[in-house]
Image (cartoon, rainbow, N blue to C red):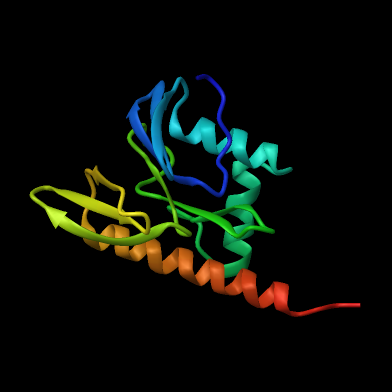
Length: 151
């Protein structure tokens, strides 16, 4: 597959190399012939923005511009966070909506999702927990803004 847009079943987009990614959905995983950031860029464009626009939105909402989580699509609160700088070819993206927990396994981290799917990533537990915290702040801000009705 060459084109993929994230959706409410997407758990993670994991970098295989600079031209190939593995997508994990609720009940399957498959390869996409694109890097993780291109998939996120395509997804943001599909929902009417750009990856850079979404990153600027995050900065405006919660003041984070490095390893910023992004709102891919507002109505379903599709929020994803990167595991490292998006300049890195080994950057992966995790769905906040499906994230359950993470724990150390040797030099890697096991990420467990709410449907019991587990994946290994080459990052630290501290980095992932920090990204979850940032993403939760973004989610909270988005929900509070949605709750305020303006006429």
